[in-house]
Length: 144
Image 1 (cartoon, rainbow, N blue to C red):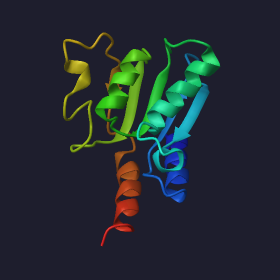
Image 2 (cartoon, rainbow, N blue to C red; image 1 turned 135 degrees about the vertical axis):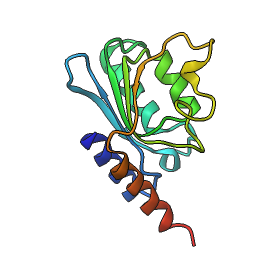
Image 3 (tube, helix red, strand yellow; image 1 turned 30 degrees about the vertical axis):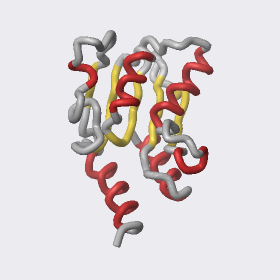
Image 4 (cartoon, one colour; image 1 turned 90 degrees about the horizontal axis):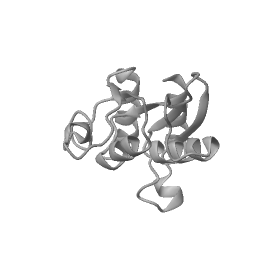
């Protein structure tokens, strides 16, 4: 989670919403890391999770990341939750819960849907305080 938080801080420094993600290979080594780049890339889908998953898949030369884990600082949105399923991630570890935009423990609960073909193990709330503090500070500085 330390590496994901570092990516989130770097994203905030670039003016992006501070979310960071890291993909760990089956042996525990880092395959890929990313922070949000929606503003920089003018791409609404350039979420940290998707960027890290895509980079890990390229590195592994496979569209499926069997045995890999994803660590992210915020509960994934429905788009990212579905992508995590499609990439066949073994375990999802996330920091802050997202009651408004989350798609795992909140909202559509993607992994509980009968149409979900792969359900990763989910561990939420890891370093939740640190992850939430980054998000609160980011938005506090931008909203009156």
